[in-house]
Structure formats: C-alpha cells, structure tokens
View 1 (cartoon, rainbow, N blue to C red):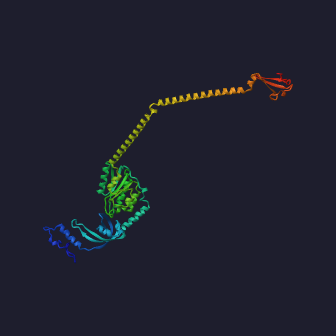
View 2 (cartoon, rainbow, N blue to C red):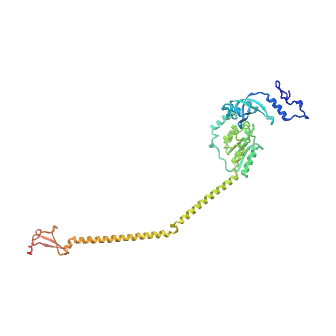
View 3 (tube, one colour):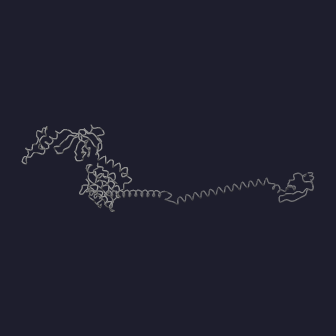
Length: 427
C-alpha cells in the first residue's frame, strides 16, 4: 500500500491524491495533499490512551496540552474544548502537569497548517505521574530540612559589581539577561560560564560552574538562567544534587528558569526566584534612570520640606517680633515701674494712716489711763497709806497708835507711825 492508498476496509476520499497522478511535471497542490491526509485521518476512530500530562495550558476556556507515554519514548499533543471540559467532574478541571490520566482521543489534522493533534472527548484521572511523585517527595524532604525557609535566604546586594551567570551557550536567556541588565546599569559586569541546560550534562556542568563562581570573591550574585520548556526538559533544575549545592553556596543565587508558569524546585531553594531571565536582570540590577529619578525626588522632597520649615520658622519669628512686648520692650518695664511706684505709694499711705491711727488710739488710751490712774489723785495732794502687810488703810481703826505705815504720795513713798485716830474737826 502506498502512502496515499486506502487501508483495507477504508474508503479513500473522492479527491484523494494518487501517486500516479503526480510527477515533477504535474505536481499536486499542498492543500489537496493536506485534504487527502485529513480524509484518511478522519476515518480513524477514537481510542483510549494512558499517559502523564506534561503540558496543560488553559486559553479562552479551552485546554491545549501534551501527554507522555509511561515509557517516556512517545508523546502526543491534544486539545480539550471548553464544552468537554465543563462536562468533566469537578476534580478533573484542576488537572496539572504530572497528573496521570486515561483519555479518549480522536486524531485530527489541520489542513492550513499541516499540524497533527488529538481532540479529547473524555478523560479520567488516575493519579500523579511517577516523575511528579518523586519530585513531590523530594520537595517535602527539602522543606522538612529547612531549605525552603525564608530565614536562610540571603539578601541580594543593591549594586553588584560582578554578576555570575550560568546559562546555555548562545542562548536567548543569556542575551536577555545581558541586554536588560546593561540597559538598567551600563557599567554592570558579568562573569558567564556556559553549561548544558537540559539533558544528562545539565546537573554536573551547572554544579561545576556554581562552585567556580561561588569561589570567586569578585562575584556578588549568581544567576542561573534558561528559557522555557516543557517540564521534562527542566528536570535538571529539580535535581537533589544541584539543589543541595545551591543551598550550600555562600553567594546569593537567583533562579531564572523558564517562563512564569514553570516552577522547578530550584525556585524554592534559591535565594530569589525570577519568573524569567528578563525578570532576573531587573531584580538583580537597579535601574540607573529610576535611581536618579528617586534621588532627584528625594532631593526635591527634602528641599520642599526644608523650605517649608524655614518659611514656617521665619513667619513664627516675625509674629513674635510684632508682639508689643518685643517691639517695645521698655514699655513693659515702664508699666511695671509705674505699677510698682503706685503700689509703694499706696503702701506708704496705708502705713502712715495706720501709724497715725495707732498714735491717736494710744493717746486716747493714755488719757483714759491717766484719768483712771491713782497717780492723778496723788498728784492733787492725796496720799495712800498701807501697812507693812500691804493692806491699804481705809479706816483709822486699821492703824492704832504705834502702827507702822508706809505713805505713798505723788512723788515716792515714806514711812510713818500712827499716833492713833484723830478727832474730826468740828466743821
């Protein structure tokens, strides 16, 4: 059977290309060739296959992915329309790379592009693939050992003098890192070591390059970069030997493997994960234009704050200077001196009045005392006689003859002796 002859039991399309109908002089068109292939492919029925998901991309509600055979030697592309996806059980809508499934597929051939794929009409989840299961066990082990802890992550230098780069030779990843880093800081320097980024040589060559760059005292940070790829090609960056070498390095390490959706274990062990090589350049090297703009902004803010502060202080000083007490400080002294003089005069008047009033009262009391005092009576010629016992003689019988008495007059006292009572005069 020739390439375009119908298989036994199959009917070729009406316009199928026959080998005898084409020659160098009478070639057939590509569209007719593709239509013939599509005609044969469309006669194939659906078949159930088992495999491991190695790609699962959701676009516009549809899924475009790839299935790998258990042997790892064969792979097919498939598409899963949104209508079919909605009919699947809820747990089937969250499938991811590494899951093992059984799918009912039907071949399809695109006439315009010549691409061959399979359309999935049903799918069942049978568990994790062996490869993903091994990775999950390794992930759990490394996490339990603390290799994923944020506390052990080393800080990247603000402005690295030399950047160590481990990547594939003449790769787009190398160009992206160099181009974006130099755009941000033209003076940046690289020390690049090329290594295989997939296959059996990937792990040993990457570890060797890492040891060389980590031992170089001029290298401030190391970037491990490669472009995107399916999980199978990125397996080297989930190798335990490489991960432990990265964890033991003293130089900060940035993982820039694949695209945003790619996530090898190196991303968890490295000190910083960059979604792409371009993102790594942006995270490792500061943008000189942004830094200059930031410095200018900070200067402007400082200048504004300083101007505002000086203006505020000047205004406050002017306000203080316009106050009467500072504008004419002698006014306060004059006012206080006048108040002091007034209070002094008032105090002097009060004291003088109090003294005069006291003198007047004292004179009155003195006059009253004089009026009541026996001295006034004595001054008029009277005398007071009292015995030696101090008893005032008020009755002549108190001083019989021979009684010694003391007589007090206005000017002193003298002793006397009584001769007895004296008869009163007739008148």
